[in-house]
View 1 (cartoon, rainbow, N blue to C red):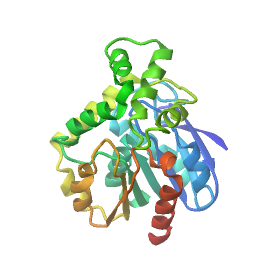
View 2: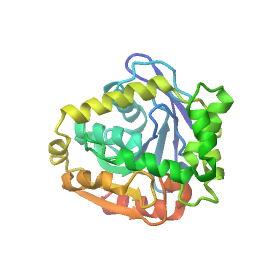
View 3: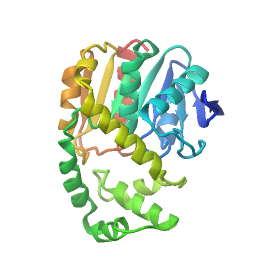
View 4: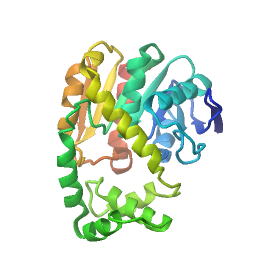
Length: 282
């Protein structure tokens, strides 16, 4: 069922509900992208009432700001209130993991469990980023020259999709399947919102520089599963300090898996999520 969620400022957010069971809200990555959880939603609909949504300015939602983490958290709260209920299991991927963690820290009473997938942790120094940049170029292999050429200039919409598919192909450990899986993520192509990406990225960097996030995390007792592929080009070490800070967290490393585990290792990923939900009493 496709739903419209309206934020408190009237912004219309695309959302979809499917399945039955404990409410599970999915937060997509980016920032500036859209929900790519079709496969995951279909898989988990047998064990949860899955809620998918496109963040403000992204995909099928109204393309308007402001683009701040606080505003996006308020939008997420509207999704929870209108489609999930008083408490929800919250799953976030990549930037969506950042959003989900920030929301859980602000509203722990509204989150029954947190699933943090392929995130980049809480270290202001962002020591993972140089490693990511090297791994990205290595992962592109023979596609590197074309990616660099597109990355260096303004692009047409078709070229922007090509650039994204090239970049996303490096996010998969299986190099043979990578182009096809990246193409799948880009279909349908809903267009990257670069203003959203810039605003939310800058906002999150300020937060990490000015806040003792580890101290905040030490107060969060919500059951948390941290899932990270051991072949993710963003190193697993990025989430080590987050795992140490969260008093009720479990870190599961998925072997032979990159940044998008529900596409690359669907059975392994779904089993880890389902087992965690059962163990955390959902």
